[in-house]
Amino acid sequence: MIIREMNKIDVEQVREIAIATWKDTYSEFIQLDIQEKVLNDAYSDDEMENRFL
Image 1 (tube, rainbow, N blue to C red):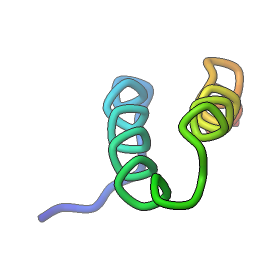
Image 2: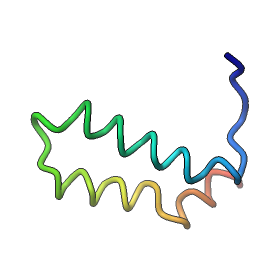
Image 3: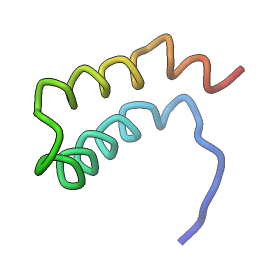
Image 4: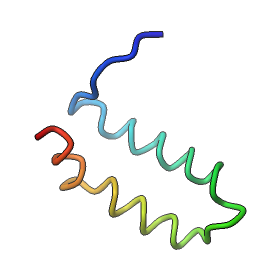
């Protein structure tokens, strides 16, 4: 496995991984609507763009 810095082409895959891991990790004690809000906020286009600054 190679670990490297995230590139802009990785953004959609990062979002997909975040959604899958959040649901798997937190579904038992964080309501789905709250998870979706956190994920939408944390992985919005603006927030993802800020990670490259």
